[in-house]
Image (cartoon, rainbow, N blue to C red; front, side):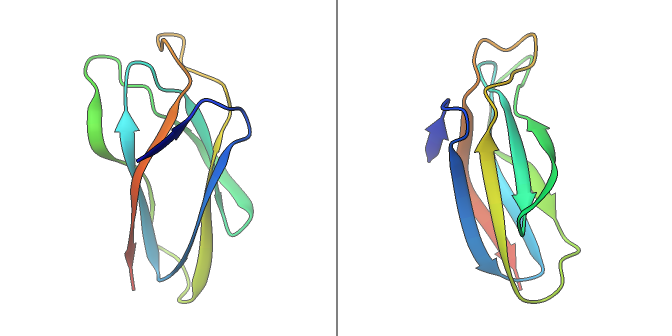
Length: 98
């Protein structure tokens, strides 16, 4: 498990396959992350969970990748949902399919 609240902190994962999934946590004190795939911003993910913390949650997935080597990057923005009490972004694991 890795977590950060530092704006700009990044985790990069290089993999070979056609799909990837970021497994993390959605919590009442979690924030928003930017997700990059092969250097291109593909979106922002709000990891806030309003009612109950979620562990080992599928936070982001992409299944339509061309076969080959790719890089998935998760970046802390320091932003948060208005209901969140924090900005942390948590990574538990990455799943890859060939």
